[in-house]
Length: 165
Image (cartoon, rainbow, N blue to C red):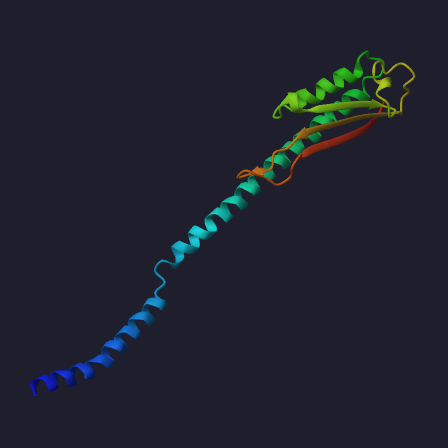
């Protein structure tokens, strides 16, 4: 009988073991102790990419503002240089010197008087007061984020036209 009692106890205890296992599994499924770490690990690269992208766009915008100001200074130099030899050369050098935060070797500048670069040597030669003096400059921008070039061949371009005085 002693063996039969043991079998009865075993069959009665078995549902408790099964119930305890089910409760344990249910608690384990509800356990969220590592969930925050997994979410953080998944979102960190994305958030870093967004942050670096914002910083890169801010730097590109800053370069654009610097370039625009330099082109404005160069156009003003060209507009007031009537009668000065090599006015376009001085206006071009004014653009590169005004853009001190940019690499001057990467700035491309084009100076036009009355829509032509051939009139750019001496503004006294047929260029009257009121004609257009135009400076266009471009500068490469870098929007590479974690090895991905989001805007290939990106160039910042600024153009300013002033009247010759």
